[in-house]
Structure formats: structure tokens, C-alpha cells
Length: 130
Ligand SMILES: [Zn+2]
Image (cartoon, rainbow, N blue to C red):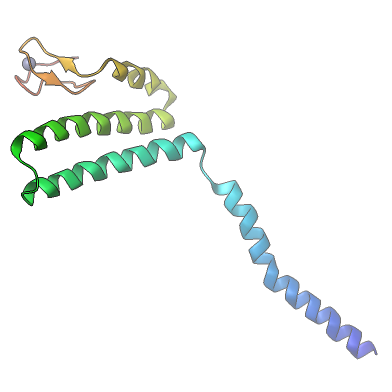
């Protein structure tokens, strides 16, 4: 009888030892998840950059003509820049002000070139913007 109780106790201990990592892991996953804002900003950044890369492939593969390529590239570049700034802003609260200014849209320089928001230099003439 004692042997039966001992073997039953040993079986329960073994079962607990096997199940323990599964229970602990469930708790650990809930603790390790990053805040939603970080995940969202990072996801937007990755999607924007992947879209730009795909656009390059499509253009080089001859699926897009020059006009469509330039139009989409400008739009996706602005989106990617906004997403990258948002991802930086989530990590650095001081940058939130810059991300907020992006809502104004692209900056038009005196030379007439339309620069992405928050550009430091004009891509048309090379003049310093800020
Ligand atoms: Zn310029």
C-alpha cells in the first residue's frame, strides 16, 4: 500500500514537472508583449518599407511605367517617412512634436520642388531647409 502511495506521489510530481513550463510560459508571454503603440508603429514602418521594396521590384520587372512608378514612389516615401518618425516617436516622446507637424504634408521649397515632410535639405536644389 505504501509503495502504491509513493508511486502515485511520484507520478503527480512528474506530471507537475512536465506541465509547469507550459503554465509558466503562458504567463511569460503575457508579460513580454510590448505596448500596443510600439507594435502598431513598428508594423506600419515595416509595411511601408516592404511596400517601397515591392514597388522597386515591380518597376525593375517592367510592371510599372515611369509615371506610375514616380507617383507611387512619392506617396509611399511620404508614408514610410511618417511611419518611421512615428516608430521613433513611440520610443522617444520628445519626437512626438515632429510627428505631429507631418500632418501638414510635404514641404514646397522656393525652387518649386516638393520635398517630403521634415526634410533637412531640398532634393531639388540642395539648399538647407532647416
Ligand atoms: Zn529647392
